[in-house]
Amino acid sequence: MSDGKLEKLQIRAYSDPAFENQVGAPLQVMMNPENYSREIKMEFTANQGQGTSGNQPRFKLKPPEELAFEILYDNTGIIDGNPRPDISDDISHLQDFLMGYEGDIHQPKFFEFVWGTSLMKGICPSLNISYKLFNPNGKPIRAICKVTIRELKEDERRVVEERNSSPDLTHYRTVKKGDTLPLMCYRIYGSSFYYLQVANANGLTNFKNLQPGQEIFFPPFEKSKI
Image 1 (tube, rainbow, N blue to C red):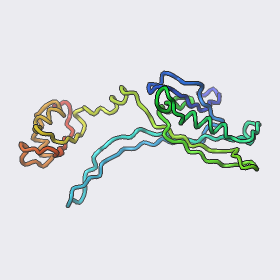
Image 2: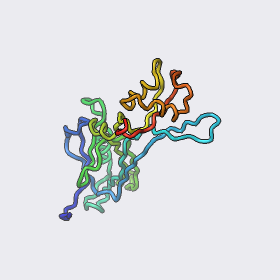
Image 3: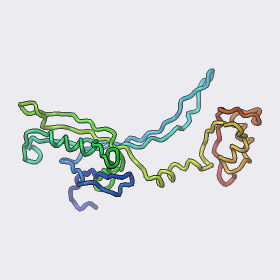
Image 4: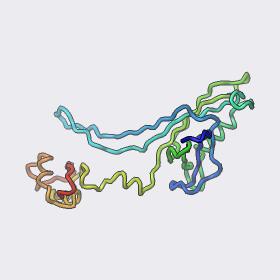
């Protein structure tokens, strides 16, 4: 149950992708965002053979998730009772914090977005600044900054989630010189037993004569049967 304490969203900066070495003080927003969004995508190939009426989409990759939200900067004094001439310094600080190049690590910093709990860890690929209000001399006093963070995962976690070597997943492999179907089955499943089933799945009438560059589909099989 909540204790009623207002938690402000923070952006913590790190100098390493393991998120162990925090750099400086966290950046804390003036007002918590009204919402945030997570984008989760899957990519499939759309290749289709000439003369065919359709195709089976093939899984290509899962891009990193992205988290996006807006940060409000307002120096009118309406929010905090402290009006200031403009927001140039605030915006410069935000831009340097998120997008500044770090010579020690030869790239921008890594970030953790925390709002009560850790929302995401990653890099900041984009920052969009929209100026909304200006004082009489044209200097901006209100802006909405859309921040996007692209997720980074530790190698151990990524390997566990992907499990690309598992024999119960669908695989596509390109034939190389010297490959045979039983040998390729052994590499995929740990057994050459299923080479006839693989030949049938690919419509191969002469599986002993594979051609380099030929793509072979290896369907999933239950581990207990391998």
